Length: 546
Image (cartoon, rainbow, N blue to C red; front, top):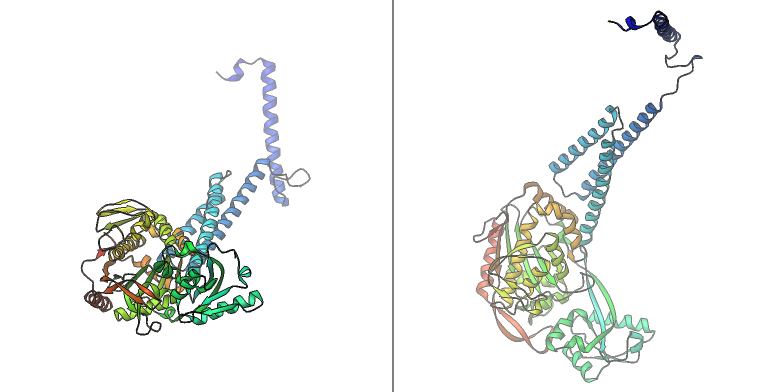
């Protein structure tokens, strides 16, 4: 039964009237819309032809869509900035750049389409765009920061000599002004021009000439200060290590009241060397504070011979006390290899070139701080130790080392590298252990870990590493490694010798401990170097993929 069957007659008539009225209104609306269309007026217009205002909901959706499109456009702009930063860094192969570009384009398309087709607020798409903008801006910042850090350590074109004035530790003088009336002991036998420049600077600062007494050499300077013949001495700060060797407690007995820096240009021809052919890098480990370019004794002397074609790396370490001639400096007189660093990193390179009858293209000067930071950034390294031993307090950290593989953090790797008291053959074994640490670092750096930690590694070495390798050369090496990701064969060799006491060019006051070279070990190293140049793969190496 229908609804009307339950109605009274009056109710039925009222219901029918309402129904007829609704039908009439609907027909009038339909006729009105048709008339408006024929007149060119929108059906949504009011009675006088004015456009009906959109509903609040419609307004809100339009604003939301516009905001979403703007965010998508900003995301695209951030993507272009990021691609530009990577292009400027110039360390990623073309394939990597193409993949990154395609991914960013797809993410932009997703963000844009989500706003265009959505009939609601598309909040998720807006949040995603904001997130991508943030990530891309932060990424661009760190990429540009990495570029600046690499530029800072690359292309070194000068060396720095720091001349100092030292007085006795209990002397009343605290500055050069307090020592105006002192008698200054000087020597011109070694780097005399630098000493004269320092004295001239002192005279200029004081406004008058100081009294100087010329002495025969460094040992005579130290002796004169000790016995009171002079009240101050002028010397290169790099000689401090030599004075500490000759006089126990020297650093505690004196204080520095003045310093003067001398910058000298070095040969930059290495920046033209092609790194797609065999090249050599002298790794000099120094323990200095202040500018990394400062001339100082080199406690670590390792040469890395690299053949990019055969993917062979030969690491050659030479004991710091090796008794050798310093070409162009010591004449026929011999000196410790470590003392060559006092005259500049180029002097160390020339000395090693003559020793091994080879050429060295690049240098990288590294201080102990950078080793700790790099290893920590890499998440530690797995180092193979030839012996089990406990490091001494002089290494900076007392710890137990197991024979075989040890996982070290930065401080542990440094202590392992510095230990020579509790290992067989002392300094010779220390050189081998330093090679083991470098080998472990190379293996970690050529692994995917490098991509993850690249920015941290670059920033950790900034200010702690100095190299004459150009920005372009570094970029080419990194790009080649990332592009082909080859497995490298790393072989380590160490020059050997016997302990002795001899007079040294840089300090003639008394005999110092030296290592007399073993010619057979030197000859074997020369043969291996030639094999690397010939493209041979050396036996007994460690693969970076192991």
